[in-house]
Image (cartoon, rainbow over all chains, first blue to last red):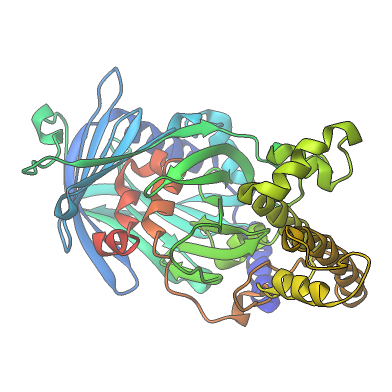
Length: 320
Length: 172
């Protein structure tokens, strides 16, 4: 790994010598963020991850009082996700379950602030790429090359007129594609409100709503150093997972990638736990046991990042 | 009461306040469970080796058999007291284990506590074969996605990463 890391560092250094973040590229990032907030649209995109490729429909209605978005997965097991300003509702029609998550607004450092976008340049070299057509739109490409091996690289294609993101690629070591989102069809403009209603299910939904409260993990004895250059803590909460499993969650982010640390008691768990690393596309999950608790680190970052954060998690009984 | 027990364990509880938690430890399963757990946590934090699950029982049995001052006979109620003594003993032995441990291992690498077979935390990525995703992967991903800045860039689209309903159903 150290060789790979050294290699990544070398590439980073070499890259820095030849390319530098340009104001134009930062401006385009900002346009993409704004388009994501302001535009109404409906379209179809393909999500690719290794062997997996899935088509989904996305519908978004931007309103002054807050937007509503709906994601429908069209391949395989049907599921729908509805996101509003206050909550995310995931509908699983086959089990008639809807899982409700709240607390997104607790996050510090909203990405739309100009200084947040400028801060990205500390961890990525952000440059303009070629022009290309995606789903019939003329797009500009923006490249984000990581400055170290602790995060992935990205390439984004945005509509030249509106800034709407039409394609997003996550790039791993050696330029490999880790995952990719590509619109195959997109209509920007007004969307009828009724298109954002969830699917109907006879007999109604079973609702699992997770409560979230801000938390202070240090006070309850838990400590972890983010220990990753460029990552800082954005939120610290207590929440419920699944069927009322209480967990603590801390999220670190470099402004683009995020890593969550979940801590939950091992006591009373029905299923056995397995410690180690699991990978799914850009997501790495690292599990270990600390002080009779299960620590699960979930990140859209390379394995090295989730492991480094995970290995710093410590428990000391408060008051010692 | 758990807080009291914790203070008692650390010797922070004034003597006059110790009677209640001590009584609770004698009578209450929950209290002694807390006592056991706190020691386990303490051991884990210090990186002591985990003891076998039936350790306390075995020590209690040994003590009960031995004609020492601590366990002079088999009077009624003795078993419970022996158990408590055994817990103290266990704590003492854990302390010894800590000393031994410190001599052998760097203190920065606490061993995970578990009654289950232990596996030291692999310091490097390549040292361990990748695991399948945890059963609750979707639950973690949903909670994670709420705070990921990717949503600012792509809206709800990253939620497509969630695996499938089979996994969700498998979690129960």
